[in-house]
Image: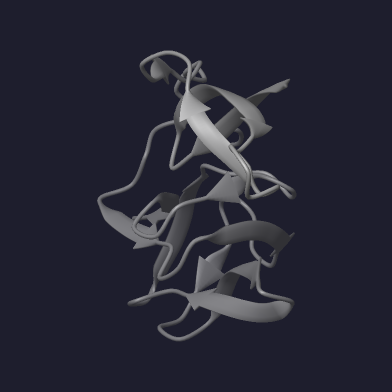
Length: 122
């Protein structure tokens, strides 16, 4: 019999795996109800001051691979601001309109979910 802690979609489960009766196949039996996964503190903006009015959001979940723009930089619609890495692909996240980068809300290596605000423009 072995004890494991498994996290699925942010839920943490303690499970005991024991050999099944006569089949020789392992059978997982829940030992306890799911317990809440530890929550990370909300991330504060990592660069710049006040957030801008135009949000630049992640189109897919992934990891921040590269920051192409910096706070105070003028960007045109379609310019790459952040590059995400997901499933070994680099995904550029572009400015939706012309503006000035007001904040960069992530750092290289940060994991992000789809829809997360990566940066803002004024």
